[in-house]
Image 1 (cartoon, rainbow, N blue to C red):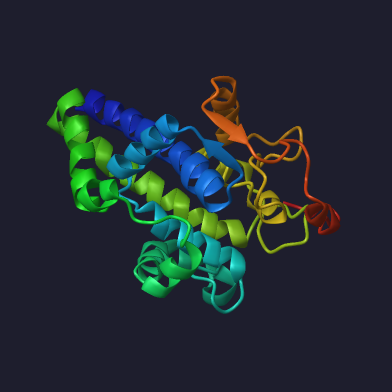
Image 2 (cartoon, one colour; image 1 turned 180 degrees about the vertical axis):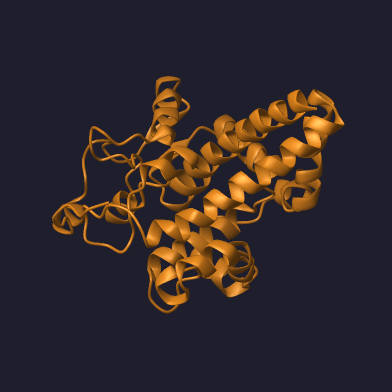
Length: 255
């Protein structure tokens, strides 16, 4: 029994890692901010991974995230801890996301460059089908006990980490730039770089979220591998901050 639980924890954590990499590289940096472009083959792999591991519809995720940047921590932000408190956002993040993602006006306004495709209508827009396929793949690979438990572990790690970026990441952490987000390296480890949130809000179109030598951004390492394999192209210089980001730099804040 102990071996079953330990294996499920490892598998679940591994699935969450893959899902977080797909989220930060594909949904966030490539689609939402156009910080990099992916070759069609690579984009389709990421799209499939997102479908079977999260059930997320990319145009909805992109729309909600872009609205967050348009109204960061002011009325209109879909999930601001400044407005609602970080504990509430941590607990209610999924509900807040679903409410905004189901708003057709939000999707129309903020994701008009991501039209619904035939593949979406036939396959990818069916979230439950994707999640069921993902669980079935785990069960087929590891047996029903490990597979189901691993899926449970993955759901909690992924949803908890995503909520923490919106809740804890806009309340705690270092603030080397003058914005309301914070840098939390431990959260960056969990979310493949997303915990370096103050950096991201300082330079949203940068493909690299680590701005200092001691910051670790796993998503950037994956992007570098993709560029070496000619499967991706970074739009902006990886080590250069925009002029706007430099202008918003403030004195280093305590963690």
